[in-house]
Amino acid sequence: MANAPFQLKITDRHDDRGNIMRLTLAAADGSPLPPFDAGSHLDIRIQDSAQGIDLWRQYSLCGDPAEHGVYRLGILNDPASRGGSQALHRIARPGLVVEASNPRNHFPLAPDARRSILIGGGIGVTPMIAMAWSLEAKGSDFILHYCTRDPERTAFLSDLQGWSFASKIRCHYDNGPDTQRFDVLRDIPEPDGGTHIYVCGPQGFMDMVIDAAQTAGHANENIHREYFSADIDTSGGAFEVVAQTSGVTVEVGANETIVKALARVGVKVEVKCEEGICGTCLTDIIEGLPDHRDAFLTEDERQDGTVMMLCCSRAKTSRLVLDI
Image 1 (spheres, one colour):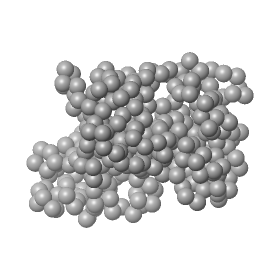
Image 2: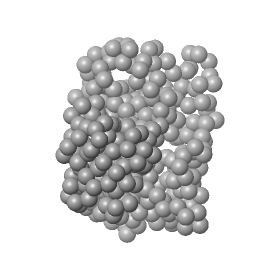
Image 3: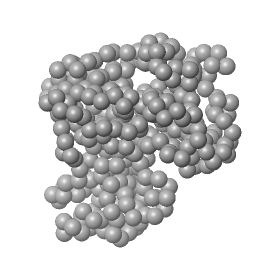
Image 4: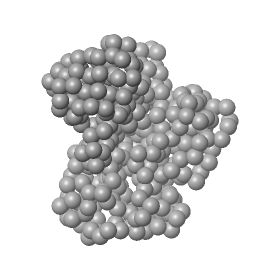
């Protein structure tokens, strides 16, 4: 199963609260599954021929990394999504075989953290669950803040009290009393070099948590984030792209992405999320200045200006030369 896609079979489906479907998957051929670290995700190919859908989407692994033989996913049926998750909700059933990538991790736990504060908003709790299992196994100091609208829309609620780290979970409800709602300044500790904060959820929720944590004095490098979707604007002025390896030059239109422009001239770029969050289309820059629009690169990588995401980012200069 090196780096090539492989087949997974759905062995169980559970429709949970909050419009979240929980899937258990195993290798279709019965072989061992590649291991994963807390924070990892799977790329899943979603094919619904009746609706003309053939997409790759990313889902965080929410099981215990020490549990071998199965992968566990939690997937929100979001009407505002671009169709992938809705299609998977329609077609997923025990016995269905889907194509998947090896687990990838762009949201790892910091190895030097003395204390970890895990904050999940809605479906954003899924990577936090895997992190909690991993931290509990290591005997690390952590707390998990799980933020939802109300108990009736809180997935995993029937299970979490039975988990070994149940005493370290705090459930916060927007529709609950003030004392139960999540308050960043009240519910996270004072900043120090050994405290690391991890946040995942809707973009507005994440922005609120990150802004408040930074205002409280937490260093940006100690605040870790993962976006499930990104509100990005891919439009802008036209510019020229030189695909140096392919020997092709193309103009990228004002309302066109680099990926689509290159496709017009026969240069295929592998993409999956198409929102600048998964890292699949990361490409080296040989010449020119990028206009980063993604939610994947770190601030240091943005400042360095040597790589960019072709599915959403643009150019600050009239010409970009890319290693593709």
